[in-house]
Image 1: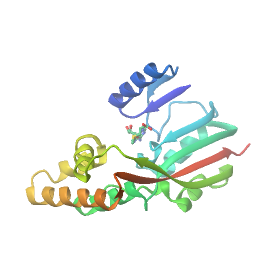
Image 2 (image 1 turned 60 degrees about the vertical axis):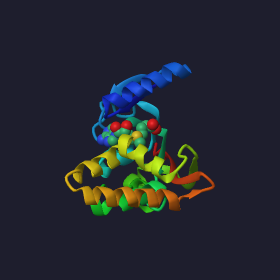
Image 3 (image 1 turned 90 degrees about the horizontal axis):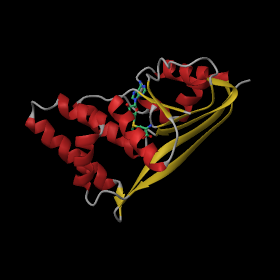
Image 4 (image 1 turned 90 degrees about the vertical axis):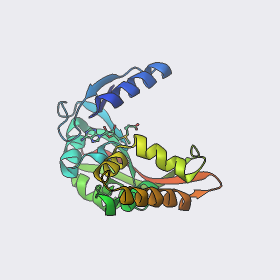
Length: 196
Ligand SMILES: C[S@@+](CC[C@H](N)C(=O)[O-])C[C@H]1O[C@@H](n2cnc3c(N)ncnc32)[C@H](O)[C@@H]1O
């Protein structure tokens, strides 16, 4: 089994977690838009909120299908545009547009995979998050650790008023999506079989 990601620092974290949990994986740096694997090399090709961040969606979809053997399974978890992380992206848009998470949109995924797959199942589901005691804690964590949010703050760093406005908007967003200390983040679960 191979685990790949574009960012070496994140591979290191994955490697440490896998070792801790006894999972045996090969870790490789790779771009989802140009995977260094042979056609049909894998029985299963999975991505958990990963491939959705590659900017050229069509190229990434082509690679997912290419490296899966005919009859093999493709499985994806993608944040939806309407769910919490989609709304996080919408909130950051006026400050420096991050791309919307379209891999969480059913029609977009259907069009990307096309008739190269069969048994396509698209199901929305929710992950509950109770790690943030206050909306500001969510904002500060994402400001420090979440790539797309770090990038938007960086783009506005010279303008303290915009930084303060973004601080307020992100805390408000988190507040609106928190009920009794629990946030609900919607994702799209995609499964498909590569056409044989
Ligand atoms: C939210 S993290 C998810 C990481 C991991 N899949 C998990 O479930 O914990 C998104 C990941 O997508 C990776 N990523 C972004 N663009 C990529 C690309 N073009 N090719 C491969 N990985 C990419 C980032 O490096 C980051 O690790």
